[in-house]
Length: 154
Ligand code: 4NP
Picture 1 (cartoon, rainbow, N blue to C red):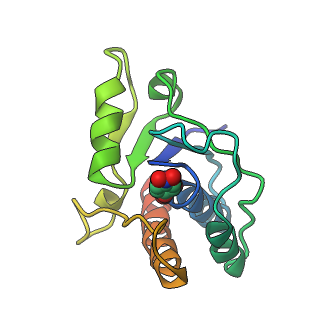
Picture 2: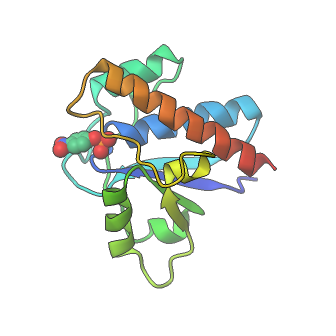
């Protein structure tokens, strides 16, 4: 039985949130935890597109294939479909809250709130950066994925 469903949200759904989804799938598989997960963007800029090539390459370095993911925009049904919705940064969180329906049941927070000592921090947007920024993103989302899996496995 899948008891946990987790949605990761960034702006474009081509860099941070697909990487977070990949890191979470990896951490869950390693822990033997069955999860339902997806990612999306608050914006529609990249709907239908695969993740950024740099995000795909960074995940691939860690043995995770995210190339088959496709961008989509967050929708109202996500607030009842998922138990957790994690925003990468404060802008994402604000935009998620703006469309949250009254009957929403998902617990909405910043992703790094699950990491001790990083509460309230953002996963920085690597889109205008270089490879090192994507490496930093992978580190951040992996730390969060591992903390989240540990919490969900309890
Ligand atoms: P993401 O990064 O939100 O981590 O997917 C971005 C992707 C695209 C854009 C901005 C950020 N953009 O402006 O197109």
